[in-house]
Each structure stands twice: as structure tokens, then as C-alpha cells.
Amino acid sequence: MAAFKRIITAAALAGVLAGLTLTVVQKIQVSPIILKAEVYEEAADAAAVSDAAVATSHAENAPHELAPGHTHTPEQAHEHEHAPDAWQPADGMERTAFTVLANISLAVGFGLLLGAALCLRSDAGGWRSGLLWGLAGYAVFFVAPSLGLPPEVPGTEAAPLADRQLWWLGTVVATAGGLSLLIFTRNWKLKLFGALLLIVPHLIGAPQPEVHVSAAPAELAQAFIQATTIANAVFWLALGGLMGWLYKKFATVQHAGCNV
Image 1 (cartoon, rainbow, N blue to C red):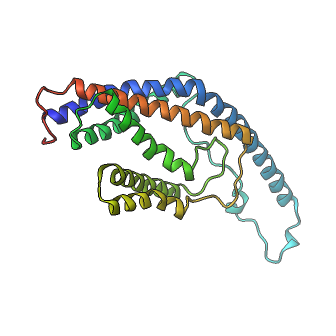
Image 2: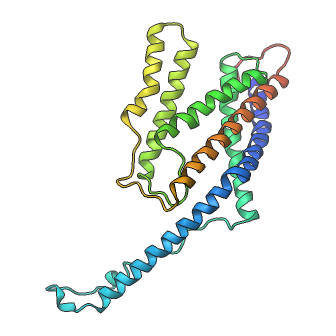
Image 3: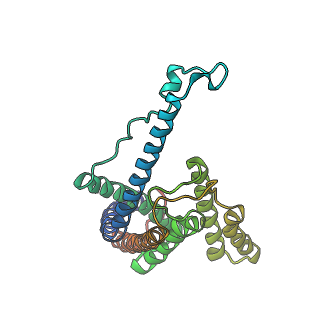
């Protein structure tokens, strides 16, 4: 029970600090790029709505006799109408507050995973050990998935969400398993299998849209990938270092083990 409480306490504190750190980095590096991309996205949406309105107007003014048996039902008359925009936080304090909440929640969750790894590996902790675990988390949860599904700015066409989520999850599991076998086993056959796990998701390939289209310029999309890569590196190093330091700080003199 002592080890469980130590993990919870360390993850909560480390998660809050790492989540706030991520928010600051995002505010400086990532958010300005997102705001610029949203301008292009809104312009593209406005142009699409205008084109749809013109096409609808032409269709309504066309003679009904163009096609045998052609009639306009109420459903067809309204098929081009757009549904109300989905709710989203307003720009400013509201958007920042939701970002902070999301980042802290994410950080606490990942902190629990790091704490469990420290406990299961009988790692005494410390910030140096935490940094290594943070690097592992960065590789598993960001680097490996980003090789197939790089971060995308608003207004970018993407493959179906369910397909992307499934590939992301498979890549995370395969990468975590592969790294574990490479680092923690001595059998060369297991190490070889671990290396195979690392490349299998990329041999399968991430789901891609039929046509790669982005409202934002390519330079902005590239800048977003770079900024997001740096922000996630800072986040994982901060979370890992803090988690390792706090885990050791809260540890009792005699290692409590993982029995809860």
C-alpha cells in the first residue's frame, strides 16, 4: 500500500508541474502556429460554403425537365445546409483553461504509468533514472507514432479517426514491447523479436487519406511538426525527471515493493 500511495502522490505532483510546463511551451511555440493555421482553415471553409451556395443556386434555377422524373424533395432541398458548429472553448482564458486542464490530466495519467514502471522494475528512482524513463515514454508515445502520423495543423485532411487510433495504439504497444525486450532481456532471440516489433507497425503503414490536402502552407505545417516535437520532448523530460525525483523523495528507507 505504501508503494501505491507513493506512486499516486508523485504522479499527481509531477503531473501538475509537467502539465503546466507543457502549457507554457505550447503557448510560446505551438499556439501561434495553430492560430495562423486556423486562419487558413476558416478561409478554406468560407470558400467551400460559397462554392456550395453557388452550386445550390444553379441547381434550384435549373429547369425541372432536365432529367426524367426529377423532383425536389424537402430532404434534397436542405441537403446542402450545414449543421451548427460543434461547441468549442472561446479564444482567450477559456481556451487556455481547458488546455491546462487537459495537459495536467494527460500528465498525471502518464505519470502513473511511469510510477508503475519504476515500481515494477524495482527502480529506486531519482531524477536521472526518471529522465531515462521519460525518454522511453517520449519514444513510445510520440516519436514512434509520429513517424507514420506526424502532427497536423488544423485544416489538414486525414484518414478516418478510428483507423488512425487503432494504428496509434498498435504502434505504442509494439514500441513499448520492443524496447522492453531490447533493454531488459539478454537472450538474443528475444532482442531480435524486440527489434522486429519496433518496425512492424511501420511496415504495415499508417492509414493515410485518399488525397493529402492542407489549407495551411507546407512551411507552416513543417513548423508545427518541429514545434510539437520540441514541446513533447520538454514535457516528457520534465515529467520523467520530476516523477523519478518525487518517487525517490517519497520512498521509505526500506523499499516497500509493489505489493498493494
